[in-house]
Length: 90
Image: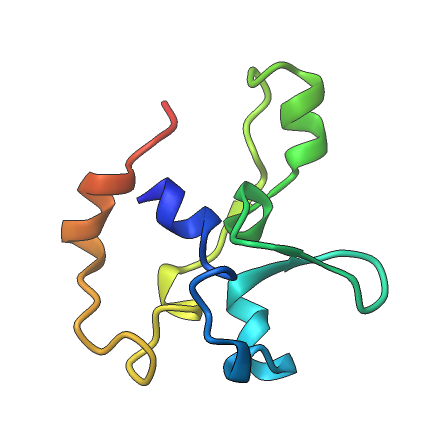
């Protein structure tokens, strides 16, 4: 599943690469720049401290999966079932 997250932008049809759709398929950078794919920072804040501490410093936050996997775009989403596929952390 993490690989699928990384390919989120590549799997998005070109016609759907609009400001609305790329919100969930990329990581926003400064200005209007985006990094294609869904990265750790998309769900977790505090990545700078986490990287600097070689993984010993926890990230500061988590967004709900439903912020992207909503009823409109992923109606059959089962967080509990899919968490078993992507579970990570300590």
